[in-house]
Length: 393
Image 1 (cartoon, rainbow, N blue to C red):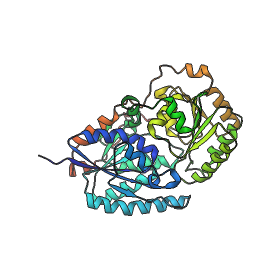
Image 2: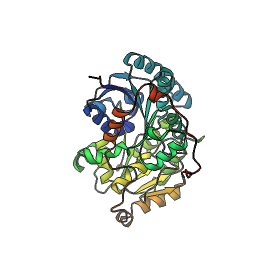
Image 3: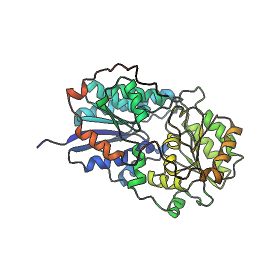
Image 4: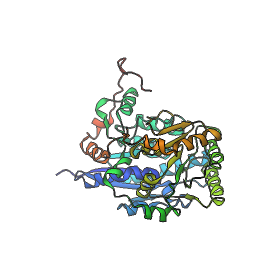
C-alpha cells in the first residue's frame, strides 16, 4: 500500500487561514493525503492578536511555528521577514520532505516557501492564481507564484484563462472556486447575540465593516485609509474596524482607526475576528467598506453592499453589489450613503457569486490526491499563447 502524499502548507495571517480551513479539513479526511502545517508571521505576533489559537480551535495543531515578522513597519522590514521565514522553512522542508508544497493567493510572505521549494525540487501547488489586484504588490507576487507553481487551483474560468496566457499547460489548471465560500455551505455561523458580544456593539442598527489595507505599490501607502477616515466623520452608522495586513504602513492605519474609535462610542477596532464570526458579522452588516479582497470575493455571496476604494483591487471580477470609488473623502461618503440605502440592498436579492459554490475544499483535495508527482509534475513546458485565446480584461 502506498503511503499518503505529504502536503506542506504555510499560513501567515488570519485572513488567509479563513480560506485554508475547509481545504485542510477535506485533505485531512482524504486517506491518500497527510498534512504538514506550518504557521508563522502575523499568526505569532502580538501586534496582530497572536491568532494561533484560532487555528487550534478549528481543530489543527501546527507542526512548526515560525516567528518571523520583523519589528519594523517598513518595506525593509518586509524584506527581513521574507529572509527570516525562508531560513526557517528550508530547515522544515529538508526535515519533513513533503511531496507537494501548497501556497495561498498573493501574500508577499508566500514568496519564501515558493523560492525555497523551487531550490529544493519540491513541486508547488498554488490556490487562487489568475486573479487580479493590479494596484498592489499582491499582483506581482501572485503572478510570480503562478510561474513557480506546478499545479494551479483557480477560483473561476476567467482566472484559468489568465493562467493559460502565462504559458501554463491546460492539465495543470483546475477551476475549484474560492475556498473561503465553503464556510457558507459547510460551517455553522454564530448567531447575532454571540457576534454582538464578540465585537462589543449591538447589531441593531446594522454596523458597517471597514477593512482597509496599505496600498503597497503607492508611495503613500496609507492614502486610501486616510481618505476613508475623513469620509467616515460624516457617517452616523456604527462601525467595526478590522486590523490591516502586516504591510508597510499598517501601524499608521491602526493608529488612525484607534483615534477614530476613541471619539465614537459606536465604533470599535478588532485585531482579529475569527472567520465564522466574521462571516456572521458580514451577514448582519449594512455594508463593507475599504479596499480588501473580501469585499470583492466574499460579499457577493450574501448580497452585501460593498464600497471599494481606490486601485488596490483593480482588475478583479465585479458583481452588482460593488460600488467603486476614488480615494476622495467626499466621493467615499457619497458611495457609503448609496450602499447603506435600503433600496440598494433590496436590488441585490438573488445575486449570484462568480467565485464558486462553496465546495472548493473538496475539489482541492481531489486535485492534490490525483496529480502526478516527481518529474512528471516538476518538468514544465511553456505553452505558446494561441492567437485564438482572447485577452482577458
